[in-house]
Length: 211
Ligand code: FE
Image 1 (cartoon, rainbow, N blue to C red):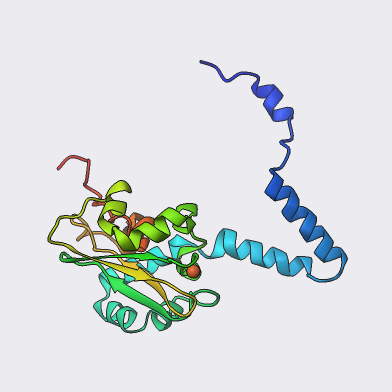
Image 2: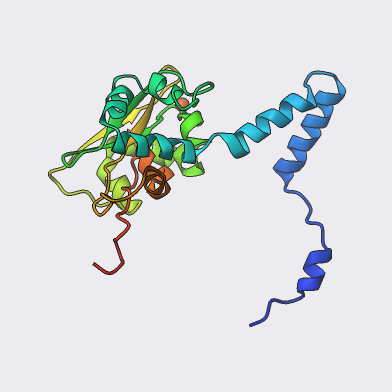
């Protein structure tokens, strides 16, 4: 089927959403009153759109997979080890890295609100902030993980880490099979945000392919 009226669609300017309009109105007012500097706002927006996010975390994970000394530093002091990459600052302080192994699976949550390691994961996804995820993950982590598509064997110990403003967590996922010959950059490309929250595993590059 063809897309109806594509020319028409191109002529349109969509009306911004209500929250977008309200944010714009607030921004205009704050700038007009001299309360915020528009350049400073641009820097903030650029930071959260382009400079912080899960690709940062993925680089940290890949380094830990290929460099045992780095991995040890990461587990000893996550904040310091991530700062080696220049990943630091707001919401990245007091960062503890928890390692997934063949016997332990870690998942992070913030039961109170939405604390999350911004410098290495970006802004939290909507479901992370949802009341259901926040409350149920501590009560029934296996059930929540199963609903999110991650079935864990019974003999795997599940550890739930409740973040707060003073202490945030980051999951170091297990390196998948079939990656022995991969470069650090290639490994980083496999690592997903959800794996660093602990609601997924990093898939083997051969999974689903020809074995
Ligand atoms: Fe919080």
